[in-house]
Image (tube, rainbow, N blue to C red):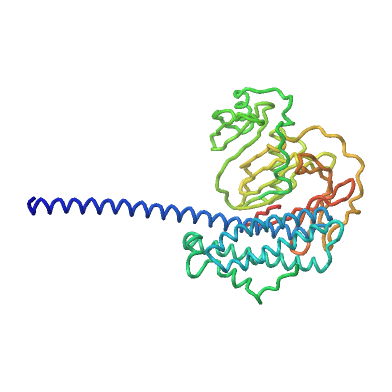
Length: 432
């Protein structure tokens, strides 16, 4: 074999070896990148789980201030215990990259244990004033921990993934360690929608039962009559709320029920200008729009404003009783009063003829929490978690800086529900 041929073969073999090595290295790099992405996703999920559960714990601990029933207190404390268990599991995953988070795990475990201990005593043994003070301490610490995690999230958003931040020399959650190291904290010894905005959604739409069906042509004619514009038929939405779907010339989408021809949904998005009307005028606009759409007897029960748009919950009212299951949400632009949204599913599912409310007790006999300042009281019918309805007095009020809606069985005056108002920092409010 000539030297020239040998040299050519050697070069070819070398090229093939380099190519094979490049492919092999490429596979390793791909696998490592894929592994890092998967691990990063797990850490991100653990982090966001912690944030969500910290918010839930804070709400439940704040609701305890307004709870005057041992049944409600026990439910809230058991909820704190469950949330703490979930948090502990998420923190354990984060601690795999950051030993300092073990300090936060210690607090979360103690919080859960203490909540379980108090819940197990109720109702046989009441919560003492000392135990209430310890709960207040825990609430404050949980709030600081949530702030630390939210701050870490902001830092991560500026500099990459949480996985990378936790793996770096200076971690994004270093503040958590400073907060929970010995000496900084004395551990105590060993909760955009108004009330009942989800309501009840039975499989049968009670309000539509027995109503005659209409054609899509009739629905189109009705839309033109009410909204003054042509409607393009998009199809029929199947299910328990069977409806014709249309697109309007102004960009809005509307669904008209096949049975009864009622507006089930209406939505239109546009930017809103400077407000020219207040909440009271917006609420009146919403009620009038629902009346025009065939929904009689509606009353605005909750208004929240955000970005010059009013979000209004309207409930059916009869004989001064508010029926929360029969709720319709309406969105009103505050620049000109245009209706930007209607969601009537709860009303269509739940509104029906009901038996008259019997004799109820005087609300003055309700045992309110210490320091609760009442701003209004009204008789309501509320949905329960068991697809039933209860007649209840609604006490709106506050304790310190916290606002609440508290509900008492109208026949027994037993406290049955505590809901807390959360301000979202941009004018709008939430109820949890």
